[in-house]
Image (cartoon, rainbow, N blue to C red):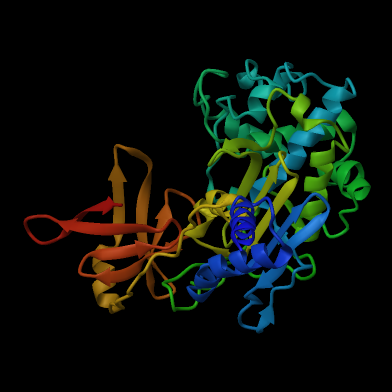
Length: 426
């Protein structure tokens, strides 16, 4: 009996550490973790987890189109947003390995019309060390602009810093890398990615939204509202950066991509100075590479644990603060640890006449973008700077609101005359 007790204790320890998981064990943990987020309308989408060649979790939750009562399917494709960068980075590395470019080359060797960035190298652009500014104009997000126009607007702005001296995320540098791919290979970006990666990896449900924006089965994107309430309406389509966020794929295809990376199908990623287009992380003692993506109404996340060949795919068509928690939470699900739960929010609806008293432009010396408070769909919403999309604020009571996009609370303070004067975020 004592031997049996010890054996059971050891088995429990192995499962807790993710070493002895069965499919049902991990699937149950993932279901228990996501159920509260689904109930709170903070998640709808697909999760796929595999270890080497064994699929442990493959399931869809929620609606891909609420109005039409169309459920999400595990086989459907989602916008990848910045997960696209993993393929753009792989394309640049492939061209470098073929001797068609060097990572140390100046960007102006391939884009001579952008002479202002002559000190920025290809590698600095891959690592977000280039200082190349972001063009944050509304039409870029709503309509998209050609390469020539994007470069013209970049030229009209000074570099954010001297290349190589700082680290600042700049998605549009990957659009310039897409142009480099086109000029070096002689192929459109989408065709290069398809012929060099999608087809060899067997990714048949993948493509580029810049050429196929309304691909069949695309789920509708939503913003999270208050728990217990429907998501905050359909989000108007955002035109993603080519190279930086323009690809789409199904969870099955992303698993094929992760497998290709893991086995070195195209090149050994560990041979690189850094996994370009990815982030290298350690959350709780487990080394991984990961990339996440946010497009208005959508979240995407992929991770690869090299130590035991575990791959994670997370795709959602409800944008919420869960996005910031996915990486550490899934590591806890895999290897043991605590996971988060959605915030407990008791919404207290306010009449529009009250909400309108908060409207205006709020500025802070600590944050570069002004916060515009507007009415959208009958609710108070935040729009940052010139960014054309708004995100809801949920009333919690006197001068207090919840910001579902980042799981933040906002308190408004008033001046001596009783007028709303400032905000405090926690």
